[in-house]
Image 1 (cartoon, each protein chain N blue to C red):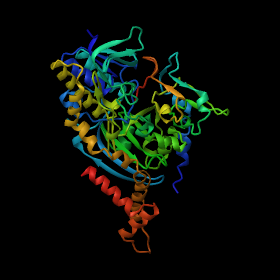
Image 2: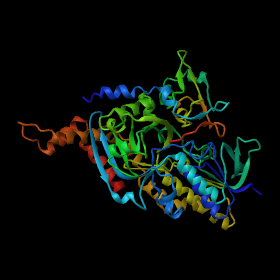
Image 3: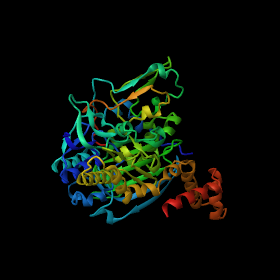
Image 4: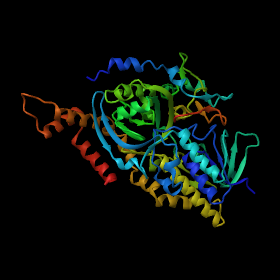
Length: 105
Length: 431
């Protein structure tokens, strides 16, 4: 029951993730405000940051570590809050005036 | 001599109202904002309830950057293929003094900050506060990421948002973890004013507020859809722990919501103007930090003051009211010659108005709202009852309502105990 309308599904799936993020203005700071200790991530079984981050900044590696970006970050803080490994994610606000600049938030 | 009488950290609704009222009271105020403009880091669902502004900026409804006045409010209980909607509209919310309004934070927060500036506060943008300066057990200022960026004051007002580094550094949070937070994600979709007026049955600057339960699949949370003037904001609020456990991406939850038969016709063809995300402190009264200490007060989201009580979803009003109370407490403490000791009277001021009274009465709301029954059973049961009630079963005679309800209850795994327990818990808070 409740199969989604195929026409609508096709239309909405047209918004790719890059297209989605291209609607957001970022002024990227030179210095990363997120630091991930890949060694600590090796022991992580949940990798919750990967699915939770609304900007999709965390990518699991086959080696067991995490590849991360800080550039297109909403600065929400979800990643460090769901991280269950002590000290894996160090997170602070980016340099003043840099980072995300929302226009329709 | 300190650099300022008061340093307010964060030019959101709490910070700007605090700075405005402090400046009006004759204090020298620095209002420090890490964004390039106030509001640039801020995002919310989309509705402000500005009643508190009547006494602070009496003509707010003439000058504020308002998108639409909410005159129609819907609560939608959904399953993946059903929706039962309670739809209320009133013309009385469409004229002064109004009730709720939709607005963009980039405009709303900038407008409030300008009021603080006009009253004499010094707004310092593009500056991140990196920590607190202490003298023994008293806060005496902040460090910033500007060179020579230390600033001193008699008192610091931390309005630094949901992640409040300052309240945590001061040790005011007993616990600060994912269980008290939700993640809000939304899309602003351009549709054009005429199209919105047609789809939502409104005109002029009247708008619609739709709240949804059962819209987020297995993840605890809710959905929303608000009308701006020529765009709509559609999104979901997801319990952080639940989202993490579901291994689902937040934008996929929005995509599923947008395909729902009750929502798809409202948002179809909308052009994505901006996608955004923000953390929401939804832990309620029991998750709040200590609200201050010598030399420091905490307001708004930084103090976890967002009210997420199911039918009531409010935050900006709690932020503004706490900012106003912080200013009043600070001015009184200055008057009494103890300019750093505002925290005790600050708390009593908040206890004396809606800010802590609403929160205290609704303190058990978060557990009720995120309960298995409310999240995963209630909407389905209601939808099944309504569907059975209106499904014509000829030639079989109509079943009795008692039987319909009982069938829907069983089909959704709801026990009599669940029903009684939830009714009792809700009744205790609402009545």
